[in-house]
Length: 297
Image 1 (cartoon, rainbow, N blue to C red):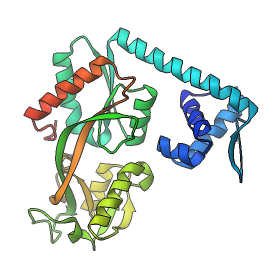
Image 2: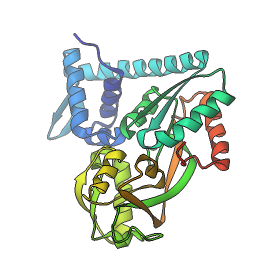
Image 3: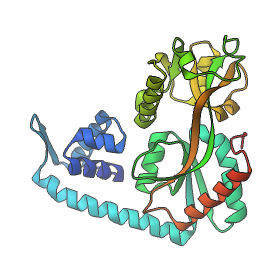
C-alpha cells in the first residue's frame, strides 16, 4: 500500500474544512478536477472512503473525521520539523518564477553570498502554481515572483517596471513610443492558459474590460519564451513586462503600454519564513533601490 503524500493531506484538510471541492480548489488555486483526482488517490492509498459526495453536498465519513484530526497533526509536525531543521542548518531555499529568474537570480544569489556567507543556498525556477504551493508547504523559504498571489502569503515589492505590448517586427504600431491598451482591441492575442494562474487572468480580465474590449485569443502558450516565439512568428500579439525583452532580441518589438506597470515581489509564508529570509529580502530591496535589477541580471 502506498503512503499518502503531504500534498494530499493538505488537499484533504482543505476540502474537509470547507466541505466543498469548489471552495477548496479556489483556496488552493488548483483545478477542481486535479483536486478530486488527488483525493481519490488518497482514499485508494488508505483503502477507505473519507468523503461522501451527492446532490446534497460533501460530508466527512466516520473514517474521514478520524483522519482529519490526524492529518492536521501530521501537517503541523511536518511544518515545525522543516522550520527547525532550516533554522539549525542555516539553509535558505529560494524559488524564482521562471520568467523572472533570468534577471533576479544573479543579483539575489550574489548579494546573499556576499552578505550572508554562512548560509547554504538552494535555488529553483518554476511556474507560479508549484512556486506558491512550495511556499505554503514549506518546500521554499522565500520566492521572487509576480503578484497577485494568494491572501495567506506575505509580499514586499522590489521592482516596478513598464508593461509592454509585444508586437511582431514590422507591425504598424512597432515604431510608437507608447500605445494605449484600447488601441490593441482589434488584434489577435496569444496568452497563457487561464488555468495557469487564475489570479493573473482575473487581473487581465479587469484590465481589458477597463480598456473596453475582450481580447480575441488565437493561441495559448505556457511559457514566456513560447509567447515570444508566437509573436515573432506573426501569430498574434501579447502583453509582458519590459524585462521579458531579455529573453528574445529578434523578431519582436516591445512598446510600453501607457499607465501599465508590473511588479516583482519577494514572497514568503508569514509563519514559516526563517529570519534569514527577511534579512535577504531587505538586502535585495536595498540593492533594487540602487540598481535596475531587470537589466539582464
